[in-house]
Image 1 (cartoon, rainbow, N blue to C red):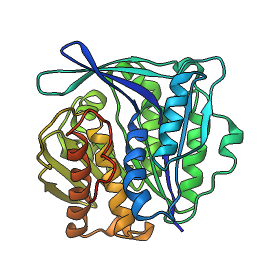
Image 2: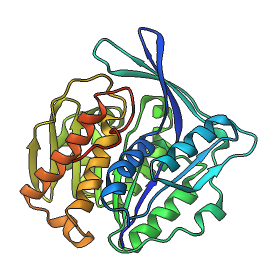
Image 3: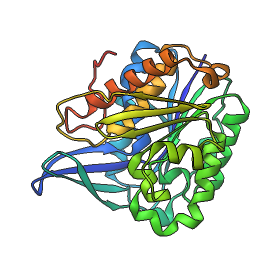
Length: 312
């Protein structure tokens, strides 16, 4: 039996429009994807365990987040509750096009994972692991996250890495970049946005990014560019697929749900570890199409995930 594991941060997102609060919802890049997977893969494949590795503070926000996970079929037994600390908060300010500008209030200095919470995690061949963002390179968590990722890799799990690198951490780039590269080496699929790569490498050209920086580390690469076509590179092939069109209420969670849709597609199409490096163009098209549907659906509301009852 396969399983799905998400490794990433949790936050409470408070969403503003015209400087007025509109919603407060649990969030975090990998977290958003796991909630969408709980609402879709968890319903269609109830035999597949879905779990989250993360941390929260010791407050009411943590109660909200963990209860929300339980309601959506995501196991929180590997979520560490940090004593005497606050959960992370994010303020998202939507502009006229409903794109978000963020202010983060995060207690990175006290980030920690409880080894006892992680001790029961086991990976098997063809399990699915989704991870990314600063959580995956945070120096205080790196011994735990790298250990989990290496164990998953060595067990034959499929690793999907969303780089999701943001400007607030740019001054740490020299320290973080080797960890990003190591994450890529461990992964079967690497995704990033054109914005990520402009911050990391000073270019947002997908082909340049792939040839110069990603292909030596991971041959399967996905670059999303907002509403523009999705670029896929695989062992010398370059494929381009139109992004899903939608009426946008908020772009928060768009990339996260692209990730969720891609992982859902790997499960629904029963794609195994040994097949990841030899997907046909038709298979890539189907995976990107499903990923795009998840992303588009998430953009239609102020929530960070696809709605309950969403069917692919």
